Amino acid sequence: MKKRTTWLLGGLAVGAGAIGAVSAYWKKRNVNSSKKSEDVWARPRMPVTFRAELMPGRDRNQRTFLVKELLPNGRVSLHDAAGEHAEKEFEPVQFDRPVS
Image (cartoon, rainbow, N blue to C red; front, side):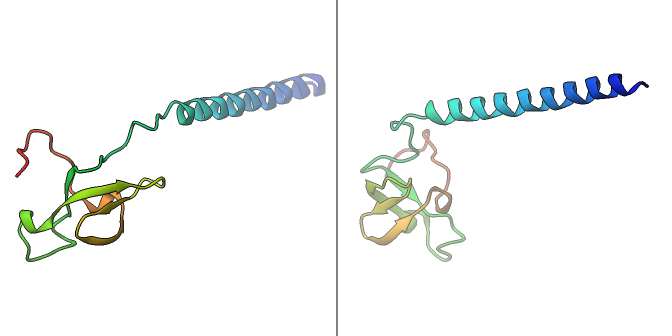
């Protein structure tokens, strides 16, 4: 291959990489901006149940608490439970289960 061809192919490779990086940045920025404040995993007065691994020896009713407040960082504070708690501490929400 001639030196000129090598330079051309190298320039095309660098340009393609730069275009890919910029498009990935724009796509990530657009996904983050489309997240709405209403799109949250918990609401006030919603019952949430701690996972059984976190409270062994207690049945479901003893592990269920009501959400007092949703905090700006995505955590919640609960009625009758101290501290802030994250979504991963709770069982997945089951909408078909009746509220007791």
